[in-house]
Image (cartoon, rainbow, N blue to C red; front, top):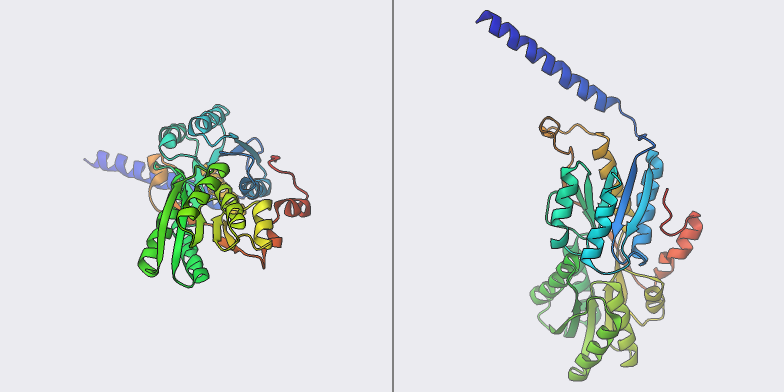
Length: 341
């Protein structure tokens, strides 16, 4: 019995010493990663301006940590094609992947596969319903509610509005919250039409013209993204400019429409911070820079699991639109679109 107690005591001491060594290792680590680590950002419709700022934040963080950053995705609004791009990244054994999935369901298994291979994944802007080390976004609920209140104020609390939709999960949340907020807080405003635009500008324009013909007193349109918002603004101009148009996201064309008074505004998530924070979560996880009080290390799990990090948002209006031009910002930074580090 005494011999057994002695053996157990020795094992306990070794465990404590080992835990102490791990803790000391974490405490003594500095933010300077292995130069051979490469982190990837994977998006869809890869040419849009929104991703430019996101990757600039991602790249800045990588540069500061002394590691590499690469942008890769698909030019299409297509789930299977983005999954293929994601799987191609996985074959390169990345240090981590920041993913904005075009579709929730399509990425459940691919993200599970990456995590099982010890490739940490952070989702940003849009999410997928499976385990990952973090999700960075502006609150889509906040965006939808903010948009509803801004629209209600512009309409004086009464009138008819229309919304556009697409299957992207975060956009659906924005629209659902917009409608719910109007119903709960502004009973004088009626949503008379919902159109599934799938971000197709030509079809959105035609749908709006049809709705406006049936509802000549249509007062407002909300789109959860930019392409449909541009189409809505074009339709509004051709209908006399009385329809208030509000969208999310921005590009040079949207900024010009806002400055000309053709669109009332755009809600812009802080995409730069989405990229920056996504990278930092991946880096902290990959390099075990933290030592959380949760037993994750002992179980062999990833050390971080952040269900939601809010990167904030801005409302772009005619008063501040001049500060959001991407090319001007890149020129000031001495940077080029999607060029890695």
